[in-house]
Amino acid sequence: MDIETLKKYLERAGRRETDDDKNGSTIEALPLRFFERFVMEGIHVDLIEPGRLICSMKVPPRLLNAGNFLHGGATATLVDLVGSAVILTAGAQQTGVSVEINVSYLDAAYVGEEIEIEARNLRVGKAIAVVSVELRKKKTGKIIAQGRHTKYLPVPSKM
Image (cartoon, rainbow, N blue to C red; front, side, top):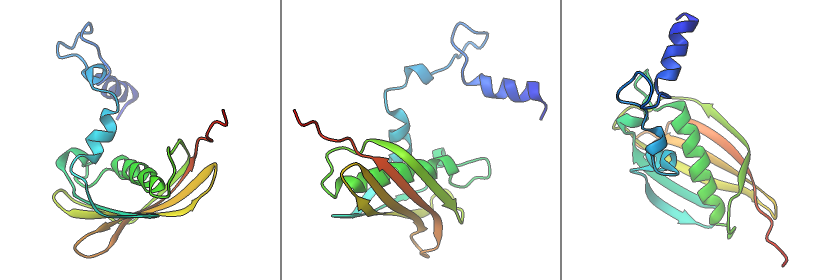
């Protein structure tokens, strides 16, 4: 793909109604935190206990990539969001911001396939939390992706 074609492809979604495209972009009209709800819709909590969280979901068509399997960005978002949620099981009041996130992609999950997302706290300290998140095919247990997520925890005010 040449540079001009690539540029047009990338800018297509960012057009406003005042541009040549009569349909315009709907991105600015989306509700806040839309992306999180977009990825997390359909998730079910199967187990929740201190330091551990297991969720499941069927891979929806909206989360597929061009190869017709679970998009890597959706996988990373699940590591981020489910990993953040497991920190709260340790009694943290907030999860703060990501310091580091790492995802290893090991297999593909296809539309309609049920996956399981297991998150575990590795350490929840006063200022930093580290979690491990694993996505598996629920039917076979085969690992789809493994992630590790480090988050800064806001320090409570002493006032």
